[in-house]
Structures are given as C-alpha cells and as structure tokens.
Amino acid sequence: MMPGHPRFKELTGEELRIHDAKNTDYARGGDPLGNFRRVAGILGQYPGLDLAQPAVVALVYLMKQLDAVLWMMCRGYDGEVENKGTRLGDVGIYAKLARILDEEGDRVPGCMP
Image 1: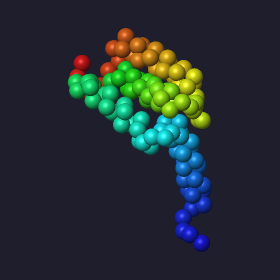
Image 2: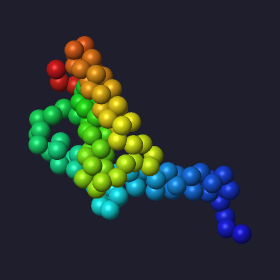
Image 3: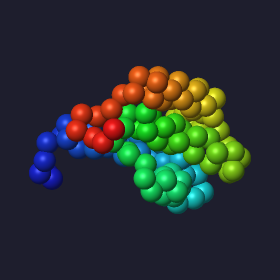
C-alpha cells in the first residue's frame, strides 16, 4: 500500500484530468505552455505597463481567452472544455470590465497613479 491520503490522490487525479482537457484546448498540437509564452510575448511589448492595475488584469484575462480562440482557429478545431463561442463571449465580458475599471480609475492602494 502506498502512503498518503486517498482523497489527496483522488483530487490529484481530478486535477490531472482537468489539466489534460484544458491543455487540449490551449495547446492542441503545440507547446503545452504556448498560451503563457504567446501572451507574455505580447505583454513584453509594453515595458511601462503596470500589471498591478485591475483594468490591466482584466485585459490580461481577455488576452488569455483571445489567444485560445486564435490558437483554435490556427489549428482548425473547437475547444473541448470551452469552445470558441464561449471564449469570445468571455472576451466581450472582460473588455467591458476593463472599461469600467479604467473609467472608475480603479487603482491598487500603494501603486503609482
């Protein structure tokens, strides 16, 4: 018998199944970490960008969804966990949230104005 709690192993197996399913959506046929690398490459084009601002965080989340859709289009498939339509819906939601946060001047306490 292997040591460790059975529920821990069950939860770990569940995480592995979710990881595999989502990775299929984000990376089918490509780098398993490609979405992080592609979005990082885009963000690297804005050296003065303050990633601590809520509107910027909303836009980063938007880019994650947009990247997934573009990768699905590039590879010619629809997602298994979330499809292109649901992800594009998320893009619209994140865009509106970023707009609201920017309009409200939402700032993280202690950050530069």
